[in-house]
Length: 398
Image (cartoon, rainbow, N blue to C red; front, side, top):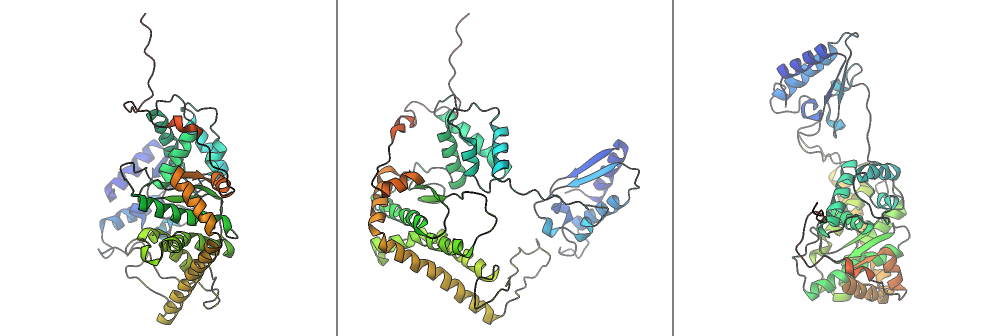
């Protein structure tokens, strides 16, 4: 945080060095809406912002000083900062699309020795929503994966493993699951994967695994064919059904007494999706095409100190009923499909228990009765001491 005098000094230095560019990162640290603090408009941050506004207004046109700032929270900036003559140009930098991701990956891969099988386009397709920093991290992780295995080149497999690590967390090798837990996880993930293949509108299954990663005992990853900016009603309904697949598979196979808390994040995602369908996107006939927003901004971060709730108790009750109806609809549809495809669920769960990780193509083949080949067993971790850098041959003595 810089104070008034430091703002003055900054601009004096800029004037001496003119033509100059002043760049302020994270402008929201000083540029938040005034009047929301506890100090009654007299706190230090507001004084700093006032000084900044004065300095930015106090230029005569001959002074060649350009002020640039960046923030992730443009919604909380004081309107005075965004007036013409101050920050009057706004450039929105969104996360890169598939073409952008491919180019960013190529930049970060420049200094990394790549094996011939690396397909940059495939990696870009498999990383929707990744920022430039995420992609740089992905390339670093892949290089580390190859280094740990004493390889000179980074292979496509390393990028896949690195992506799993970045998206799902590190493998928890120390976590020994009991046979019962493994079996239950296999059916849970099998339920998700099978529904993803059988609902009307769903992203293709990229991978299913029962290897514990991060806070999850297993995971099914679906990847969109292309970057999506909006979802249709059919896609959302299908998504609700897929999310309910894990809990439904547990119930069908092991009975209601044996279901676990493993579906907590699925239920959380489904509830949030259903609530958004009803309150934001107008997908409920009972509530109509109206946006019902509770002000859920964190106190002090947004524009108001007190939370306001602009829905009546009756409407709130109706929203809860509609959310429950939508999630229950997904649950019932999951029951119908899995009951119909019970044999396929058993087949898929057995394959997951045997192979632990299956790709999307392998899942489709397993359901057709074709077992996956595991020829790359020799790629497993070497039994010798692990090293963090590739081993180079010793130079010949001169």
